[in-house]
Image (cartoon, rainbow, N blue to C red; front, side, top):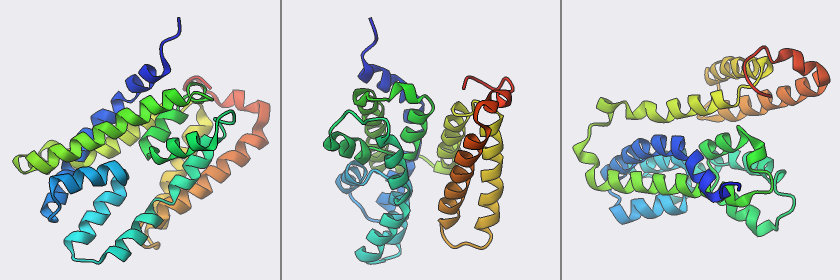
Length: 238
């Protein structure tokens, strides 16, 4: 008998959990330094649930910036979620819009990367995604609250906490490398991001790199067609 999809999603979320807990602790510590209470920190992680936006919002609060610029900045940073949720919607054509809305509100970069590493697991299987995303969200809230209460006992730089999230992204990225085409697109994205970062303000270099690289990837796959088999090169399963 096939394992319950919710349970499978929870198991697959474990790598994300290991990344979210330490980063969440770091966020809770910084938020406390900005003057937020543990309850406010927990509610922020529950309702906003966007790591990069939360860190930036806390930094802006610490500098005494008013609420309107914080909301606008958070909105702009999270625009990438429109692209990710649009992609996921293609795999849930049999389900009602409210299910897609619920899945989209739980979407993060890490859960999206994990889900897309094996699209067959998520296709018309919302319960699997609920397990994956719900477990990840719970880990983020837990880390944030722990950081709010006990973060001052930990010096973040001493435990490599700042590198926890990049390390998690690297691991999730490698799960999606199935052939030489994917590997070449990764290299291309790295070069473009460094190039754009040198002259674009803020985090716009990330958005521009993602749009260009994904567009090139789609065009290259369509152009190669059946010849893609020759690009596998033993890297992994396509």
